[in-house]
Image (tube, rainbow, N blue to C red; front, side, top):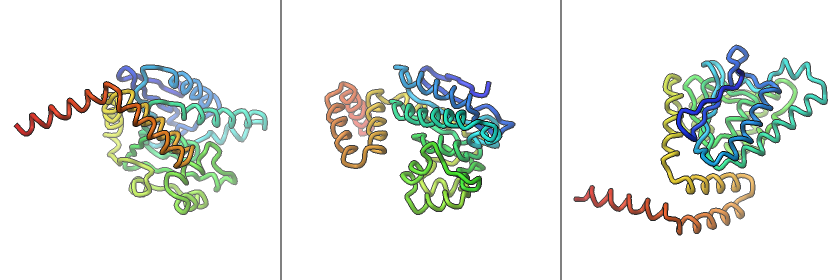
Length: 256
């Protein structure tokens, strides 16, 4: 299978792009499978976190399969692009975080998948880049907008117009990655992050994800209004009282 699905814990799903010999390039059929998975996961009530990674240690994903695209008719290409756009729209409905475990080069559409993630862990030999300009086109899955929002206009313009990928330390400095790890540690570290999130009150995680997604797309004013409304809602929830009680008990025990 070119897309592997595992569930190491209930509600924690790991999806692996599985074409290592082709640097995990994404075919049209894979795009449709991912869209079906996104749709299925978006409505699962028990979902707590999704880990997205690639097979092998060379590439997270080299992006769209250019050999396939070269053979596609204009109608097939338009259909493939529509699937990719729809997949991005569905991803924004997730009430749980997506963790990208970048095990190698994330280029083109692969980089756009990473940019759509909420948390990014990178292997110390990995890189992220949008090299489309070198092939005479540009990102088409939201890459220009996501990159500009993540790193700012100047750094985004440099990456997009040069087509050069950035390594892990530069990615960390730009805010493209949360952590850089040795390759052997990456998989377990991503799972540990997912498990940590799964221990938090689900309603609080969902509220934070809603605020982040809306704020990213809806602008500062609307994002602040939504955050305030969600915050007020959580203040009256029993999960908050339980959390405060645990905090008080822990600190009382520490002082005594």
